Amino acid sequence: MQRSYSRLLGVVGKPNTGKSTFFSAATLVAAEIANYPFTTIKPNRGVGYVRTPCVHEEFKVQDNPRNSLCLNGIRLVPAEIIDIAGIVPGAWEGRGLGNQFLDEIRRADALIHVVDASGGTDCEGKSCKPGEHDPIEDVQFLEKEINMWMLTILKKDWSKISRTAETDKKGLIHHLEDRLAGLSIKRQCVAEAVRRANLNLDRPVSWTDDDFYRFIDNLRRIAKPMLIVANKIDLPTAKANIERLRKLDYVVIPCSAEAELGLRRAAEKQLIDYKPGDGTFKITQPEKLSAGQINGLEAIKEKILSTNGSTGVQEAINTAYLKLLDMITVYPVEDLEHLTDHNGRILTDAYLIPRGTTARLFAYIIHSELGESFLYAINARDKRRIGEDAILKDRDVISIVSAQKRA
Ligand SMILES: Nc1nc2c(ncn2[C@@H]2O[C@H](COP(=O)(O)OP(=O)(O)OP(=O)(O)O)[C@@H](O)[C@H]2O)c(=O)[nH]1
Ligand SMILES: [Mg+2]
Image 1 (cartoon, rainbow, N blue to C red):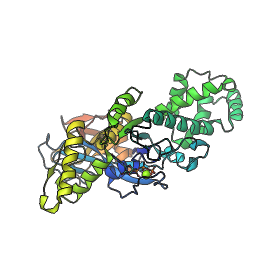
Image 2 (tube, rainbow, N blue to C red):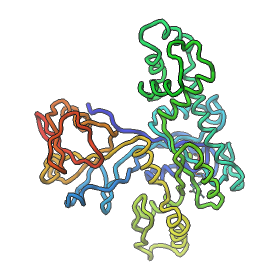
Image 3 (cartoon, rainbow, N blue to C red):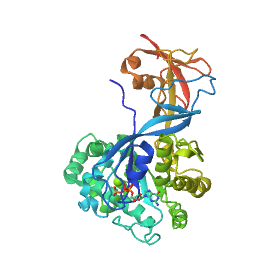
């Protein structure tokens, strides 16, 4: 069995902010998009990409990617994304679609909070005059919804848990971990949240409501790190709101999901030359586009790409995976001389793995047999041997030598 290393990004927010548009633009999965709340009911799941500079140019080889794509020196490494139904105030108590979709957050390792930065959607997700709604409220409300939902899970049977924890030897962290295991929250996150909240581990029965909330708020920030996608920057009322959103304690990424979706679809049909995350594009088949389509594309170039640098969708995914989740890319090869796999294909795979992964753990990630029979690894850059505990670095090209074979 392979070791699990993949991470899942959850796209969250109130209804009608552009979550499914963002998701579709990132994955090209056709998700339903409409200008009313609760368009999405069942979560959409798809594969987006993390964009990183490929190593093939540095090694002066032509690559044949298999698990990823390489477009003009840019390696696009697959990364899973889930588009979750809209969350409204009171969802934790069952309002709107209830807490069934808050449950989807269980599986996510990091969250992309899509906010309508133009202020054109009210707190229930209904369209209103742009500028009328304050998106800062959306950030505060979502924090509260997730906190209250987690708190409800934690508080279930709390009196029993806290009494047992005071008497048995396992300690409170163990019991908290047990209670929160269903939320994909790990022990070290629980321990860190207890430390940050400055709680008395010996007397859990004495925890006040304030103590609980402080603990949960810290735990959410650690275990479900979040960034804000300030969407709909193509609307003029977004600009001032983005400056205000930046004052909050989150990374804020200005974005036009709609523009990205248009560009990705045009690129898919080979009408334009555009890679996700590019700051510009070239129209390659003008004869196949109407005057209106050309104007639309030019408007995206002028109003979004040239002022914002990009549409923001790719930047959000990269920031979530590389900063919030602190992941790196590593390329396994079998033949160090030619950087090939066992089929003679060059730099076929790029893996997105957590920073801190050791050479041996990486072997396990590729295949458990390779992990079990691991002897040592070799770094293709300097041809040095590295041991099982050596920590891999971003863009390392690694050959693993095992008692059975190389990979
Ligand atoms: N102006 C503008 N509109 C956008 C943008 N992104 C999405 N929209 C529009 O916002 C509306 C809602 O988009 P969806 O993607 O369905 O929103 P959602 O957040 O998934 O909505 P629910 O599934 O109902 O929660 C649609 O009319 C989109 O076309 C954007 O970047 N700019
Ligand atoms: Mg949706």
